[in-house]
Length: 461
Image 1 (cartoon, rainbow, N blue to C red):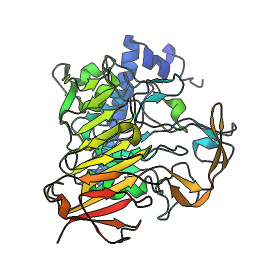
Image 2: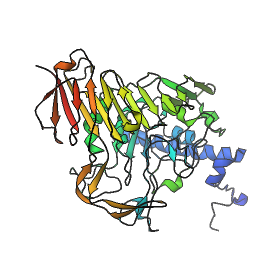
Image 3: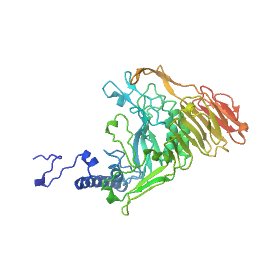
């Protein structure tokens, strides 16, 4: 007879695979045996195919096993990651997407259309629109390093519609480095031109691509130091199959198209501890379970602030801003007006920009207090010309998608450069292609032009 995989059949010595819900919840011996069987099957598959690619056909590149998720991250997540260990690096996807709904045709999963409605959301405050509290302690850039292997995010985005996207390049270049992320691939650039209409995963816009000159340079040159691990966990392979819950795990952070598959992650350690430094999990073949957590008092829940161990990165999730202050990169993203006057090692910032980013980055890999060439980048909010919405009790309804050119909220504010030769520095406003727009000005003070995003700062000749 035809075998039903959901039913045991002792007469033919067949044992059914338990449902995934059971594997996520139960802790019986049969559950453990089933999980071991599936994990070892998957591990062997990745091991055999990695060996085939490298040895049989001579592929010389790196191999990633997979980037997918499980039904229960705290219990089954470690088993999934262990099965990937025959690969050379660990990969995953990450999206920060607020509420975006359609008329029931599921088109909001992959497009932006008139008639859709949405809510704006910033990652800076962990705001949960359903509860009204700051309880959504997860962003796509949070990371756990497994087996001391490289980590990448091969799909990353803050999808549209959402007015708060200028934070993504800044966080990607700084926070992801602290977390031990080695490479970022944004989904998806599409064409080389500016986008003519708002697509779901648009990157060709001023708030995103317009900040890449600073973001890519800072990330690739490692202007933010990778933190020492504050949380380490060794789980011997045999103990993986005991199905113990992780004390700290990542939420999958999927886009709307796949978010219905997400499972909330939980653990005994507050999820914001992930933000204070790097976390590492390894799977030794022998030894004992070992957990180490250095509580450096870097998370201040009372004042709603987060610091990192190397004291380069600071996050205020009450006012809603994050800042970097080190030798080669200094800047801030989030709700700038609420943040107030910001004092960095080599600049002081005053601005009435409600939301956006301001960066000062070394172009010659020298510390900012001695650099011969620096870039000051300013960004605020963007939208296409003609974009129209109406406010409703559930969010904003899209009336018109708009058309090019992009509009960016006027910049305003002042930066005072702080270094011994600050008065000798020349500040040259650049256009959007990086060419000289206006004659150079003398330091140490720069008043932002309302429509200039880039300033080249050079030592006077």
